[in-house]
Image (cartoon, rainbow, N blue to C red):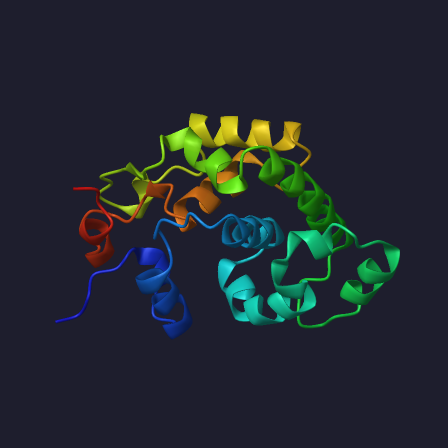
Length: 189
């Protein structure tokens, strides 16, 4: 019997593995959340599979997404990253990642980045019960608020659509369709 997955997982083994093991799994680790938000920002205008296939290159190029290292970067590191064919070479997104590392540091020192994000959903994933992927919105009022608050804190490349995709990926919202084999596994008791 073939497993039923969300349609976006398609037939690509990389996508299917990501869908089955990562997407929608609640992540409470501040640094992992930072990495995912940065990668979602790099994905803007591109296919997620592009980012997924370059993720290891991104991790190498961005010092394991250590915000304390990235926050110190300047023109030399931007030039290095713009010359790296293993990542998405977009000046605005690269400079945005550096700016975001600095904003992350402030939130992390104040209340913890994970606590900041999970406070929007009272610390547990929002559960949805959507029949088809067509029922899944591109953004929600909550993602609009999180986006607004991230921008106020100094983040960039975090519009409400990017934030909603991030919330889905990190398990702040369980948006697997109801007949997907992962929906029930990720539904709160």
